[in-house]
Length: 479
Image (cartoon, rainbow, N blue to C red; front, side):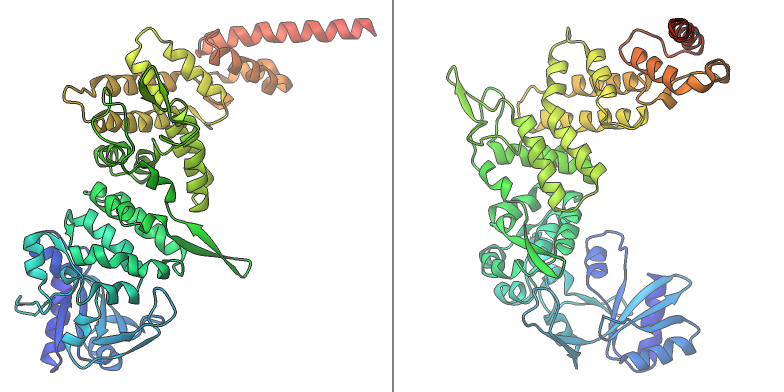
């Protein structure tokens, strides 16, 4: 704030209008700590650059792709100082076709997206609200500046920003905003996958994530396509149409208070604000209700196999969103195993060691620490799943305790030979056959036949070497 105030003082003393604008003003009014301070001014870029340089501030000059924006560096941080602008949009779904200088703050404000982001603050702290932003903050309402159809029609990414701000601020979208969203859906297909994914990721970690995703899905925005440029050609990329069938999907009331979609939202809201865990929470029941999954057995609704089918869907969804292989595999694993986790929590006689050892041999993990992390994430998703069922007498204590138990087990079961607790004496004894011997020891430890302790490993390696040497001598004798 101090650095921004100094810049306002510098500009106003030189005879220019200058204001802090947008999100910082909103956050100040909501008693939140702003992360960035953007400044608008009547001064043009060359005038801004001359002023700040004479004042001893650093600046690389005007930002290349951002018309009229100057980056100013000071001891307090970096700030974007923008000249009043107005925009004209064309064929591009996100970027304006033409940007020109505006003559007043009002012109600059009227091009912005939402009323809560359209307020300005003077040097003396006076708020200039030309669009009713303060009123909407008080009402906890997200509303566009001007006609919603025009704002969304100009920049289709604002549709996703609306969902994100609903989640970030825990506001309700204004009726006019919701009614206008479908009018801009044809423009969504011109948005890049990178931009859409960035907005979805931002939404996924917001405090009121359930509200934001409800708008995304119920409005029909999740059913739209964006695009990706590959080999010089644009390819359509579905956003999240797999979620639509969950809306209104009946569930067995004995276990679930909500329908498929509101259960998903409840789980999402109850989960840790971590991108990977939230993706798993969002997709954990994505296969429920599908024709080859949904059935009625003994008069009850069932979705046997939805965990495995859901894992395949999660893998397909995250792959098309171009996430890393590790991210795709981990989320898919969490979805695939969430029902398995619940089974063990509710069946004390089940052999958890058998499950952990099976996972150790599966090739899914590179080291014990990875498996421990995965079990911790699975426990987090399943704890949220219990809460999301909405039952009055629910308890997550069992899930928490079992998750801790699995993590402790994971530390004891090696994934790779480097996880074996052997000494240099073992290596000296086995010599050129070290790799083969360690591989054998790993399998035996994973199967529970051998303790992962130096003495036990050394003795087992010694016996293995004796057998190998005996086999070798027998082969020589036979020749």
